[in-house]
Length: 640
Ligand code: 6R9
Image (cartoon, rainbow, N blue to C red; front, side, top):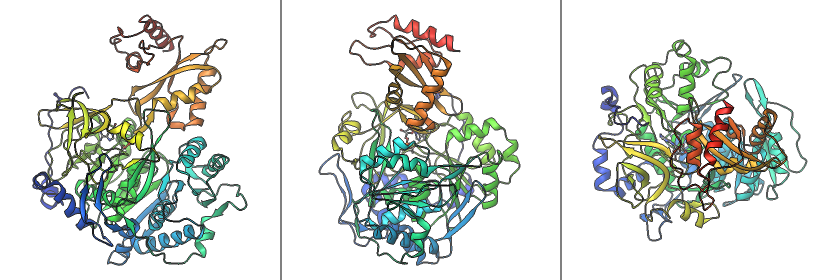
């Protein structure tokens, strides 16, 4: 990513896409001239309001911005009712395939019915507007049904990624005080059932607010159902009534909470509301993936992440798109699984993460070549910077040498795309997310807020799908995002600008790692490590990794009386996996007797990263003990 000046391959939009694209070149000018008017027009075009809003943006109390003030709507109504009542009634909303080959098709009419029934189930269990509902589910249609049913009642959902540990689930449930947990018996991973319900049971040993747990039968693995608390989804649905009147929600009522890693050990509950979120997820999807009526759209993200929320569930369903969903590993039964499905379902738009692209690259093109991917028109990338090699491979092999790649930069906090090309308009360069979406004002600034060509990525004005706060902690919201630059939103990423004005996101500038596109706080991993009786102190850094982008590398000081050994390394890795989840497991653990610290006691992770990535060690003059680095470097070298 240091070669921005060297990257001069430019790919213009294919004529066929440019001619018929939803977004024409003048869209930028329009949004520039009248930013609020641009969002106003899309709010009117893309959302069915029960009551119109009387103001587009209320910025009287920054950073607590309000969009589409006093507008009333229901997000589930927008995602199902309006399609079920139109000629999309028998159009496929969800096409689903499980790892072991189970197939489900839900039309908009069927999805509408399921959502209504499940809303009645939840209401029957006492869930009311404002109550929180936790979801710990695989990528199955019932997860989408459950999310939309929550939205119908006005009960904010909080999804916890199925790969997270019982402890992570417990902490997230307790932070938001969820009343109901929805989970499933399990799901298949490489042909074996993964026991989600067992994990949920462990979490629920210490979640006082949970009254009921609803279990979807999926993998048919054995589970223990606790009398009075646990209920089967299919039994509840069998007797549920067919219609639930959608709750009339304010544009600023909470739609969901989604936890994400920050710079401290405790994950933040990012709060998203209804109106602005529904406007921007749809507008971006419509233009960035150029959504058309006959598309078969596949975003490979898990619904437990923001990409799943915005671009598997809310954005595409609100637009009435056919969404393909797969629950399983990408190489089961063989390494061509994804391309086999893309061919069979005739996927036209495909959205995935660089880490997956690099994995396919490593496997070689023979698996791709077995399949006809000619239906694919547009490709997308999200989650981390995409290296130009992976970009070219993606275009050549998945995009048959011509499909434009939408490298979309955004975050859990931004709710929807922020920096991204448009397929019929923007000339592309491999490795850059290019320019801000129309109506979004992004800049790169230095410490003093001056616009520069290399520095911090900021958003200069509020946008409709922005987070509204950190759940239960307004101060953390202010501290984290608004303290550094006042009225500019601080994204936590660094960026460069090239001679075309394109933005190259270079990665996090804070203590957040990006492992396979998943955010992980160094502090989270460190606190898991120091929980082990042998560990006195730990410092965690991200180390460049060919496939994962970054891998976790931990430097550990043991307590007196303990000695480093391969067994202890295994034990510590396992503990982190159990405590946070397998994605957080360190690849490297190095025992050392000291860590590089400033005189004020702050660990200089930058220097540890230099060691882990084999660079000359940077400036050590601010260290309390400059000699410490030599020992650590020697220990690291000894490991290899
Ligand atoms: C949507 C999502 C956000 C962080 C973000 C940045 C990195 C995401 C990127 C990208 C470069 C892209 N990131 N997309 N970096 N180019 N196209 O991933 O949300 O999980 O909250 O992660 O991911 O570092 O700050 P989230």
